[in-house]
Image (cartoon, rainbow, N blue to C red):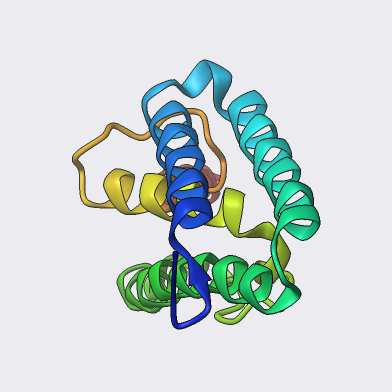
Length: 148
């Protein structure tokens, strides 16, 4: 069954992988990298299976829907983070990532994890990509500079 060339069955499969990967990466800091890679591998395995089973238009529409979702989550968060952490000296990350079409299986869980960390819902951990960690590192560097 398709809606606007998006195959619903395969979209549910991709959403299930995305949900599992997001929960695993956000809630288990020890397994973050491994779960991200496993989610990426599973998503690509489903993509290969989709390429075999579906017409190319449905594959592109279904995969593109999730890539657009990744951008819809990443861009607003990055805009908010740029404004919030502007005075810390942190260099902003790019807003639009061309490789997002291929890397959305890891972009979405990372965006969700960063949002939850920055909002204070989940504590900041040893992930160096979090803005909270960047703020702490920059503050410690400034304190060390003042002590000299």
